Length: 412
Image (cartoon, rainbow, N blue to C red; front, side, top):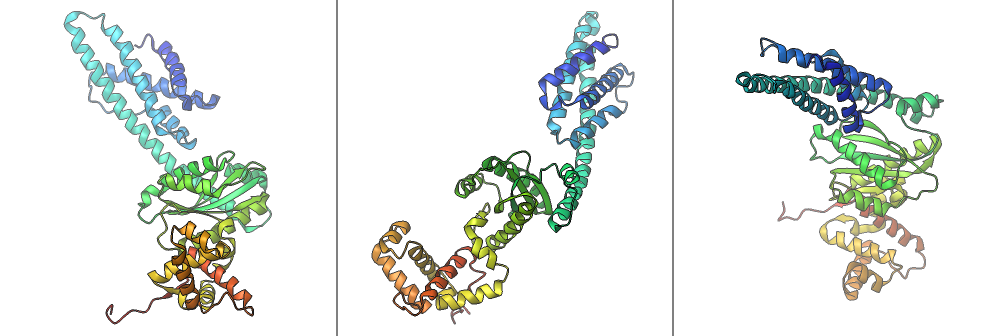
């Protein structure tokens, strides 16, 4: 093996590059790969040749350096470990060809010892480079996240910023069309799983939106991130399609999207809108873990959501007793909302809610009585507009905007 070492290394480098495309990088990374393979092969031959097979194994310096470099480039650890498995298999195969020429009485014991020593060596080295990779990735991600937060903070502050340096640090173009989002993990998701969850959310959302390049993701804390997606000019967003795809994926996270904006102003404005949408989404009761809301769907409500006390008073004034939080009022509110949204058509409302027309008429009458409103009052046209707005607010933000139901004597 010593005599054929150089040829073996050259061949193994080429095989590794061909078999694992993730490792076929630029010249610098290929040089690091070559150095890593060379030092591991030399150390492997030395370990096989030792008189003491249980001597400590230490991963070569070049191997650790290459693992750290891959971590900085987001190359999966699985690609690196696979490279070691390929190298191990080819090393044993080549060594066995030499061992086959030994005398019969020592051939089998030698092959057994060869296989055992090579396996132990590769296992220990894989463990050590894996630790080096994970430690570097944690350090690099933490450092990179800090830099991203710093640059994003400067951009959001509205102060003059060096666009070229900001884009270089963020890995994201700032002069295009942006769609911002806020994503948060469901309460049942362990904190340690949140980072992987957000990576999945980012990838799935980018695919559904047709985003250009890698989206920018900056953590707010361990359970929430901010996202920006770069979109092509003229591309339209289809909220219903995006929501259906994300909610059907089973990802346990919520997503609040802003509107598409252009340039730095759009970058900031879209995030502000997404933050307002998040406030609306989190106020609602009983929503699925993967709930996806777009600013265009709730814009008037999102603009009012910052003043929750004022919004609660508005709902109480507009809906009267219908603003009480109980089960009966809930389905009366939803019936009246559907009825007003369908231009006061009992037939269309009955069809939409899969109920009998008489049931719709009864519920609408009950709801209007509780509101203290009438469709026939010519002096209060704006009152019905207020009712319709209040019902939309309840649709998204109940129970936060409702009055608590009075407890009965029995419940006490």
